[in-house]
Image 1: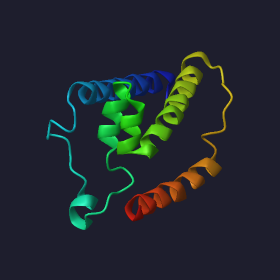
Image 2: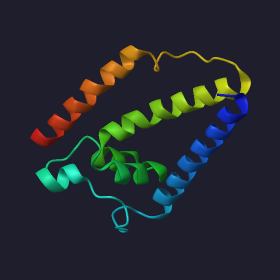
Image 3: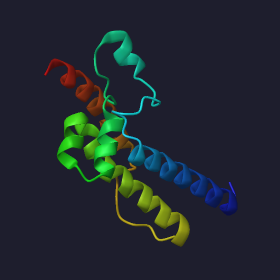
Image 4: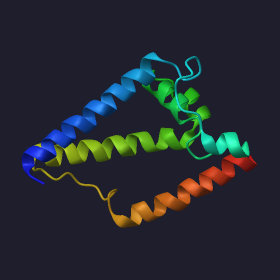
Length: 126
């Protein structure tokens, strides 16, 4: 992939993320029902690891950390990590400077999967 194509990809991805955040910021998922419903929850009645994620994101975007935690603690914990990874990669892409961090190493990805599964199980038994 050429450097120009990579920059275009970053611009499109960040623009999409920005638009998605604006939609969630201005349209509360508890009041507007155009957001997708969780198929897993509809079929089983159980909450998947992502259930409450939109509501938690809405609360985070408005600075309500405790309310966001009540909807989905995993989203609250993952948001700063995801922001750091995106910022780190964006800085690397634009300046060539590599910032410290090992969060993109395979061991962390392999730790993420059981963490999400365990969270999904525990949120339904408590």
